[in-house]
Length: 457
Image (tube, rainbow, N blue to C red):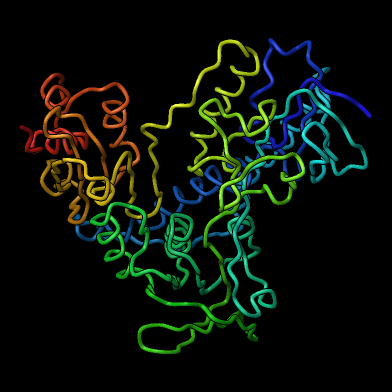
């Protein structure tokens, strides 16, 4: 049985851990799927490449209000799809080849790994190995809801929907979170009739309430949004799929050519059989880790979706750096910093957020003040004729420190960055607003004016 100094399970952010300082270590890297993990292959990178293309396809619809007659003639789905994956697939294969064939101290095993005990792993290739240290970075997979006869319909998840052979005429999406909202934007912009089925009374219900309400109102104008619906049964038809729903007005059905299940993701701890290693998990299956990313077995560390509260690549990358440091410096451990984790939804409009929502601040009994600023109130907002976007800030009235920031509107994921910086480095709202130049007329004036409007003590 072969023994390793370090075993890494998962090749997303975990693949960045082997460092030059580990050149003398014998390292095994285990991967059950495509090299590079979720973000590269089926997550944030290809989806945002589709989103950017969708933004271009949707742009002519907004041109009329600017005095420009424009239209989208044809969407060439195979060309769009192939442009994206002809870029991504070679990166995944190149990464696998580099680790497997060009790293003398690294051995790659391609199979579904399972724990035998806290130091022993069945690689899924017919070989069992042992290790002194183990890093679990095995990510998550789409969660499939319990819907009767769903397995007979040939449904898609975010793992498969982007590689469709042809663009469907209609698509029904079960889910109301960021994955559902982004794909609804992509396919509707390409001319697909989109229906979104949500169990809750809002889309993106985990965002600040005002943001979620605004987004849902806008979505209803573009897509067939069915709120407060429970999907009870799926049925394959001659032309696609039929879903049977229960809602406020009783039973109903909806039909489409393709079905996308986008109801969240689940950690891959069950596939690894982590209980055999004596690892503690949260009720939702995530591994329990401390601030140093150590599991209940100190020689086993974990990062990313399999252990984190945040299913975000930038969080996994941060945690990977912490894990790498702590492996190399066991007597000088550092902690992950999850104080101000930003997130974005790349739908239309974009949404970006960091820190507390107003509802969370209220529930925690925190004293706070808020201020909102509309895109329509700044000069660049006039240029875009944006009438729905706004920024909302939440702050401590005594110190002026920001507690949360939420933006819905054009380029929200970029506009929010100075607010993330202010929170991370402890800059108060007044100093931030008045202590620097703000380019005029540019979108960051949205942030400047919102800061100035905070009713601080």
